Length: 169
Image (cartoon, rainbow, N blue to C red):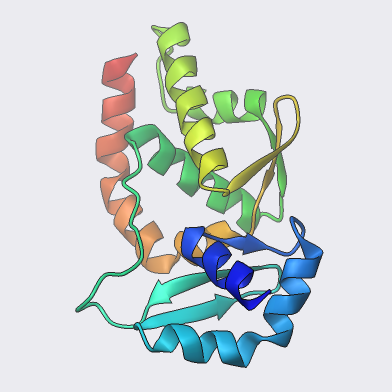
């Protein structure tokens, strides 16, 4: 089971709700797993219902950084705000509505296509989980990846992003 946990962590985030047996083994083997990954400058981060690896220092980057599109970045911030309001469920229509606030909706088809791509990206990165057709659970792992520093950086870019949204539509 140790090998399966290690490989799963190297691939990305482990969620308690996705595989309870894997999660229980992770908790049971936590010290050994921490020691194993510390040898290659990776730290095991365990939250209440998810776990992932993080680089211990900035000198060597061992974990993969994913560059998000403009729409996916914007959506990530929106979803983080929803979690702050303790909303864990969101529909595709809710997401469209939230984007519409910032756009003039000249080209609704193009906007929806860009939003759909952003949603798909965040599903692939496991920040969103589709629980029904067009209904998504916002996963708490967003809190770890979209932290205060990230939000601060995004707030600085928000005006630029809103202008871009309005110009594209």
